[in-house]
Length: 415
Image 1 (cartoon, rainbow, N blue to C red):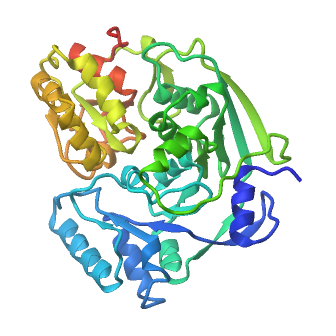
Image 2: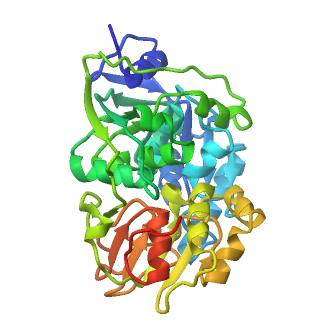
């Protein structure tokens, strides 16, 4: 019987013929927890076990509050460092490496066909490389640490068949915001959101990661993109694990297909206070106080290049502060080598160390009461980036850089 990619991955993991809707206990290939959610996972693990099932399949990065910004954060870091040493976990990345969802694929931990879990809802990012990857709770992770297994309900799939050529200054971020605006915040609840079609084939890995990263914002269990030559080229000098490639049969009974034409798509923006409150940028007029370029959604080198090209030779508007936060040390180093960092600094931006930054409202770059942030991240809920009396808009790096120059939300008009 024809099956979706999700059904095939779970069938492979369980050595059984599973279908969507089945409840299965699957083998986990990779487990990730970070400095914010990890302490509860560790404390819960000690209530049920003493030694993790496989230290080589656990990845622990520090990325949310790095360097530690409070005594509580410092205590959490100490707890986790002790755990890493005690459990002989080699895949530990301290405060200098970057955001978990960026460094896992960068450092070769993600390959197609695997089941990957992380104590962070945007773990679905890794589906861009053909893995079934999803966020779980910290106490669920304790069970994974102890057994290497977890129960799942195999999801149905929405297949977004995307075709047409994107206009200049329209990117993967605009596409996924547009889809979320149409589907709604719960329109894909517990579904695997798979993206295919000619538009996706022509996209680079960076934009593909944007799509899968934000599948959760329409309720998706994971985001998925079929493995192709671009995926394999990305993995070539990064991953040394063996893997299996699974592809969706478009006549699978559990698959719903939605056609998307991007030919006339304009730059999009998510307005406060919900990610599905999406409009064309041309319909939004607002002054801004802060611009945040970064996060696991749009903090990659491709994003920094887009913004730097717009900012080069220009200055950030008076009264606007701009934070540029590369998603990883690799991205940070490339930005230095390519001269992008100098462009940002010369324009008046503040370049920070690789981390989550203001995305979660728990670290640097928070906004105060009444302030407006334009962010390339993935969530704009009330209080997400600081004061509940502030407002957060979400956009592409091109819109963010243009708006930083003009001091208000604006359509990109350069390049």
